[in-house]
Length: 518
Image 1: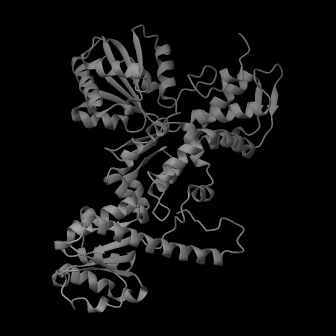
Image 2 (image 1 turned 30 degrees about the vertical axis):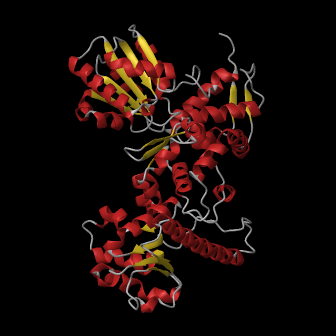
C-alpha cells in the first residue's frame, strides 16, 4: 500500500479514508438504512460526521440498489429535488442540506416520505440530511409523519472518538502529536475541527506525508490556534463583522445582531434557539425579540449579504433557531477577542444600565403616535417598552406588578405622550404615579400634543420636551422625535463611558471603554 500524503489522512473536506471513526449513532444508522421504504432523517451540526457516516454505512451494508445523492446547494440538483414526488426516481435518494429548501419543497418531500412509508415501498427510500431541527422542520409540514420516519441526531462526539480519529492519523503518518489531549478538548466533539487542527500541526512539524521513522511533533496549542485563527480570519472576518453590524451600524443601539453572534459562539450545540436565549439574557430581550418578530433578522440574512452568509449561517424563522453550517466559522467566532471585536465593529458600548432604553406612556387615543415611535425606535435597534409588543408576556400576570418596575426604574427614559385624554385614563394615571419621582432625575421626556388643554400638564412645564401637532406631517414629526430621542440617548451613553474611562485609567486593559461581556 502506498504511503499516504497528509491531505489524504487529516482531511478537512470530503469523506475520510484513514481517519474515519464510527460515531455513537452509527449502528442505529445501519439499521435504518436497510429498512425498506421508511424515511430517514439525519440531523446535527456540520462537521460532526453525518454525510461521511451515511457513505461509509452504505459501503459496509453492500447495498446494491441505485443511490442518488443530491444537495440543495447545487442548482441542477435543486431542480431534481423539486420534481422528486412526481418523478420516477427509485433506489435510495439522499437529499443533503435539506434545511436550505423552500417551505413548499419541504412540504412535498414530507408528503412523499409519508406515502412511501405507508406503502412500505421496496423500491424507493428517502434519506434527508440537514443541520439541527431538520426532523422538526419535516414534521411541521406533515404532523402524522413523526411515526413514519427514523430521526437520527448526531450530537457532539465524545472525547474517546476524537482520540480515535487522531490516533488513526498518527498511525497512518507514523507520527506522535505531543498535544493530542489539548486537541481533543479544543475540538469540542467535532471531527472536522480535530482534522483541521491536526493537519495544521503536521504542516507546522514539516510532516507532509507518512514518515519512514516514527516522528514526534512538538508544538504548543496556542501557536497552532493562532495560526489557524489567522488563516480563518481571511475567510470569516468580513462575515462576522457584517453580521455583528446588522443592516446598518447603529452605534448607540443595543447591538442585537452582535449579541446573537456572541451567544452562538458560546453555544455548545452550534445552534441557538433564540427564544431560549432571550430567556437566559433578559436584558437583551426587547431588542433581540424585535429583530425576530418584526422579520428584520430574516430579511437581513436574505438581503444584501445573503451570498456572504449562505455558506456559514442558517436561520429557520419558523422555529427561531439560528445555526452555523461551516464548522470552521464556529471555530473562528469561538476564538474572537470579543472586546477588541466590539470596538472594531464600531459600537460605543454593549453595557446597559437598564432593561429598556425607552418606555412609552400614552392614552389609547394616541396609540398611532406610540406605534409610529415604537417602529422608528426599533429600527434604531434600541430597547423600547410598548404594551402592544409585550401583550403576550403581560397575559396572566398581575398587570400593576408587571408594569410598575418598568416605569419606576427599568427604563432609562419614560417618554410620555401628553394628549388630551392622558389625564383621564386609569392606566395612564397609574403609570404616571410610578415615574413621577423621576422628573428630578432627568429621566422623563414629555411630548406635548398641541390640542391638549392649556394647564393640563403644568407639572411638566419646567421640563424640556417636544411638541406634537396632529395637523402637521405625521411622518416628519415621528422622525424628528425619534432623532431627538436618539441624540439624547447617545449623549447619555457618551457621558457614562467617559466615567468608565476615568475610573479605569490605570487598568492594563487599554481599550478606551471598559467592555464586560454579559
